[in-house]
Image 1 (tube, rainbow, N blue to C red):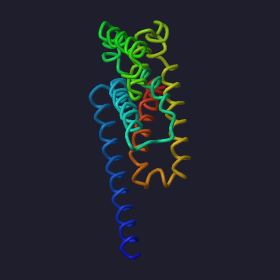
Image 2 (tube, rainbow, N blue to C red):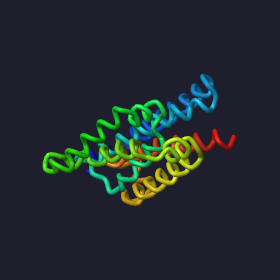
Image 3 (cartoon, rainbow, N blue to C red):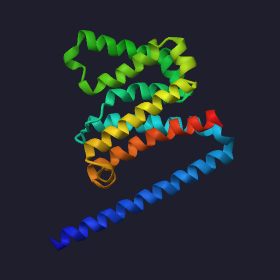
Length: 198
């Protein structure tokens, strides 16, 4: 009993220490981004971080760290937050080939098409076939940022509710990695709104 209480106190102290270090690191990243290129350059950097966090959450959901969050919402989030350079690569010939192979595998060899590959294939197909209005105008506008903000807030709210409260979402080991990933999803749209408004 005594060892368990000591372990829980030590675990809480370690987690709090890690969260403080993460906030210091995030503050330094923001300061360096402002120094290097003003507020605008931080948007593409945080967009990349957010896209990586969304991909991380997709991968995490397919492992034994199953979550109750609606991971299909991460696909439009990645669509709107992916940096233009990577987005243009997938929108070009490479993306068309990946989409064609995914469709052929899904149609003609459904038993050999794994379930974990459906959402990434849907993302590539969405990037390839999205109309220019969506792919060019809305992605680089306040509309895409608002969509990302709504998705991130919804996922955070659902995760906190599934964890049993705000405190449990940040202290339980099995939910902490999801919480960090979802909080990283919030960074990009908040930063982009700050840049657009100011």
